[in-house]
Image (cartoon, rainbow, N blue to C red; front, side, top):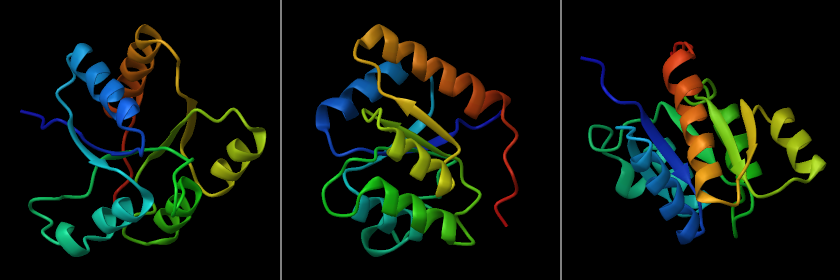
Length: 147
């Protein structure tokens, strides 16, 4: 049996977190989802630091959904650190943001983002995006080796 993919959602807005989790449930996707509420927490999770040191309890995710606009360490900095770390650089990172700014999009791709998605406004549109992310990134896409 194939184990469900594990997702790290990096999102500071509790309403967006709830919307994303609800969309995955509504789509009947059995993915395991961990939530990091800010960039600092995301980096601690990914580098196995602090309360996330136990890799059995907090294994590396199969995919990262990353918001850009967060206080403190923003998504751009998180992305740079992910893509500059040998152990993390091959993890797929999907930017999931409300920003339509061309500069944000260009910087994201320049820093190694694998995809850039603008958050839909309605739940139904969000559901479609979640299904498409799952279909491509968690089903069709063949992951690179992480080591």
